[in-house]
Amino acid sequence: MLSITKIFSFEAAHRISNYQGSCSRVHGHSYKIQITVTGKEIGEDDMLIDFKVLKDLVNESVIRQFDHSFILQRNAKNINDFSLLEQRVFWMDYEPTAERMVLWMVTELEKALPVSIYLRKIVLFETETSFVTWESVPHLK
Ligand SMILES: Nc1nc2c(c(=O)[nH]1)N=C([C@H](O)[C@H](O)COP(=O)(O)OP(=O)(O)OP(=O)(O)O)CN2
Ligand SMILES: [Zn+2]
Image (cartoon, rainbow, N blue to C red):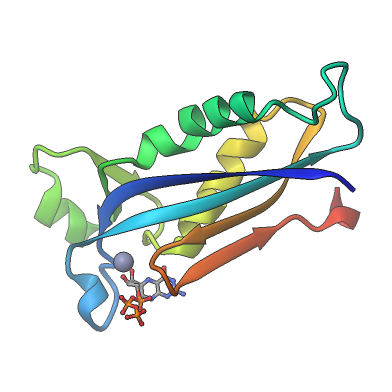
């Protein structure tokens, strides 16, 4: 089966407020993401989906939301510490672990992709050595 992949990056700060250790402190990452999509057939343009179209769609639905933001779980501790901060805070329902960020991206991308194009895989690198992978399960489609 054909699939295409495009690579993105964004910078963001976060903290994992319930973490026992240094990740509970505010710190930043240069996130890297690989987005892979697939489809049953290629179009009249001989493409599954134009890389440029995929780029615009991912930038609009995902990257723009996170880039240069401060990602926090909306909980009492963070609201107390940061709600008055004059920064761009991206509030999440869960701690901003790479796993939760990927699941948020899956929801947004599945809404944004054209009907004939399916999200196949997302790999989110939080650091050079730590990454999370999400893959669709074909028989559940
Ligand atoms: N399963 C997860 N574990 C951790 C996450 C996460 O999102 N999912 N996040 C963190 C912290 O955000 C931390 O910034 C990243 O941790 P780590 O990879 O350990 O970072 P290091 O810079 O220490 O990596 P080294 O390459 O080992 O130096 C923690 N855990
Ligand atoms: Zn971190």
